[in-house]
Amino acid sequence: MALYADKGRNLDAWLKTVTYYSQQKTEMTEQSRSMSLRHCVGVPDDLGDVLEFRIPSANAADKETEHAALPPRGWNSYDAFCWIISEQEFLESADIVAKRLLPHGYEYVVVDYLWYRKKVKGAHIDSEGIDLIDEWGRMVPDPERWPSSKGGKGFTEIAKKVHDIGLKFGIHVMKGISTQAVNANTLIYDYDKGGPYMEAGRQWRAQDIAIKEKPCAWMPHGFMAVNTKLGAGKAFLRSLHKQYADWGVDFVKHDCAFGDDLDEGEIAVVSEVFKGQQNRPIIYSLSPGTSATPAMAQKINGLANMYRVTGDDWDSWPDVAAHFSVARDFAAANMTGALGLKGKSWPDLDMLPLGWLTDANSTQGPYRACKLTQDEQKTQITLWAMAKSPLMFGGDFPYINGGKGGATGPSAGAIASGVRSWIATGRKGEIYLAFFNLNNAKTTIWAEIADLSKAIPGWKIKPPCKGTEIWSGKDFGVMKKSVWAEVETHGCALFVLNCN
Image (tube, rainbow, N blue to C red):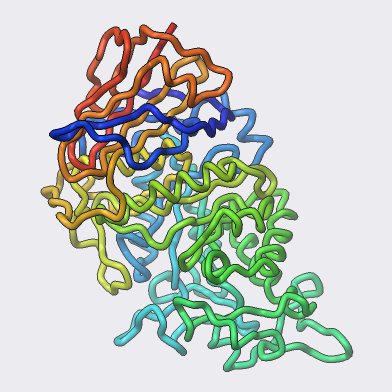
């Protein structure tokens, strides 16, 4: 079962009428922004599989003419494999995505960071001197983990195999230039001329363009900014990203260039490269350290297709709860579905750490179940959908459908509390209404039907309404005055309403 939401309706009114009961009546302490639902929310066959989303066929024409017309969906290797994933593991995962998730709109498979790092004793995320670079200082895959890259092929063969099964291929890249290339003082490649970059009668090298006082905040020994005011600095970035396009890359996740490490110059250069890609459009995704704000997003408006608005999201309730206010703020700033590179752009709430996982900064592959309770997992996927975040599943696949027992979520208090509510309109006149219980106790949440119009300018919603709750499949029948639900601790209720 799938429910298709309206295309292109951004609703930004306050929903003021939701209150909750615990043991006594209490007024809601924090209100949420309303937002239209562009994702199509599907009901899972069992609670272990919470990723059933479909792309409406009505949007097919838009997808052909507008880049990132919908928030991108796919799988990313980080939450399950950290940086140590191998070619075999990646291709096995891609095959599962093609068979099981592609029919629901999940089309990208992305190799996350450090695919160029040698997996040797003592290697870690900020290791120095054990990466693979070519003669021009550009990162290349480690052939021990990526055998098909031997002979200077890069990810060409991997990309072809991914394309052959109907998917699109993505990679994670870091800002600027690597410390290793700077230490080696490699020549800068002029992609257009096919040789060393020449200007002012001389060849330019890595140390000419590196800004050593601007290292990546979370990988200071690994990468640093380049001077994009120099022709050589721009040439280096062009040589990197044109090579990725030559490999057949469809999605680039550019890290340490947004948030605290915001580098408008580098983003503009890379965006210009991708803007010129006519044969194979590339989704341009930005990733921060922390502290991304709507003001930062407005600075790069039109240059990217998605951008992370939080630090890493892991499988803990405080991580999930912290996203409610962030999502609200970006919606309030009208950044959802705003102008993007050759199309639209989307605030990204980060990967979905569901299924079988590893740990942050680990050198161990997937070994444990997601720690979120089933209610917390449903809350996460519902918020991501209602906020129109890109959906990038992060877990390993063999255990999604019950291969291992579930884990109990943490008991620590969340960063946020109270209740929240988001509202959306559907293409056929239906209303989507989500209640979220951030409290540590089961809570009754409701909204007066007559007040819903206040959250949706231009809509006249009058009772009675017929309603169904999506996750449970429960038919609530005719609702004459209010919509209500008893919502479990850290849980949610998602209604589709047909009124008038």
